[in-house]
Length: 286
Image 1 (cartoon, one colour):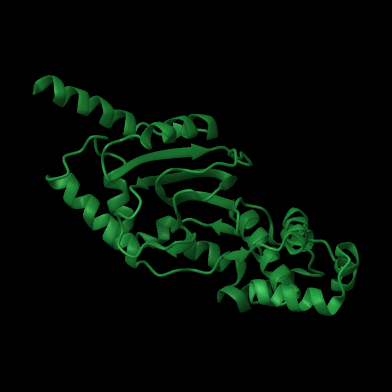
Image 2: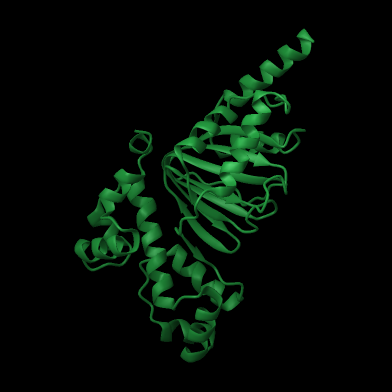
């Protein structure tokens, strides 16, 4: 029993030890997929502008952003995850991350179907102080925690809370139609592009009417509204990394900082710097 306890303690210390960079985090995440428990957790840090390889997991994943901003590209959408928010990624969904600023996260890998009524698609949520506290506990548990003891009860509590957190709309949908997806990917690469709908229609060899109809049918938005959302998310990521509002506004295609600030407040309910202070984890915990 003492040998087993020491083994568990050692594994627990490995979980507490933060994984640094995409390569180390990916390697350890692969090991955690094999853990014979409903949940496996780790903390990780990523340097500014680092990217992960495009990958999938066998388990559902929940990522809590504790510092910096992460952009997450999935097969069906692009998400921006600021501090105080979490991203749910179902098992098997391909995704790739980019760090804006010095990023720190806590993440858990959950046995599929372990959370009742878990979302079948990626979902961004605004986390509560309770979920933040439970995630902190999870990353300090031994990997082979006792499912019948205190750790097991905390895991059950955490999974219940993740399942009931409210969704936040900080993402854009990428349509499955390959012609529309090509347009969307080009805009995601260069949000400042001012190509008109007619010009995109010519490139795709579609009529403006057909492109307009398809885009609204597959995204629920007009192309102009979708592009504005992309610019907002790009701006949010860059502002979270500490870039100046004026530079970001001009780089994402706005004629003036005031026009950008008006759009930002209309979409998110606060001016850029006010929103970022609101999202700061130190403020949320008070």
